[in-house]
Length: 166
Image (cartoon, rainbow, N blue to C red):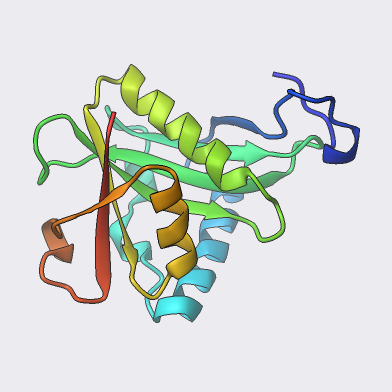
């Protein structure tokens, strides 16, 4: 995959390079701390307690980072099995794109969905807060539909759970 700065990008070439990264790395930690701050400002809860980076190397898991043409990390996302869901269900966690970097979220999501299919998952689920209207609109544009609350999100009025069949 060729990496070029957006202004110099030839038509049809990808803008972002998405690749695996150890979720316990300093670079991943920086991205997730930024995400924590953003989520805490939006909803009052960083969501950090619901993702353990040390489990990112477990079977069925993935953690990816999107880099710009200069190799700078501009976003991250994680995938993990969801035991409380139907068999073949993965959950997306820690999805984050630094502000001002259009297309990062779509590139990260495409990479996670490709990885989920490669691993044999049948569906992916996620949760976001109703107040996070930007994230909710993004996922809906990507084909996700609202599903009943699952796990710790069941019955929570502030949470909206979304699913996509692969």
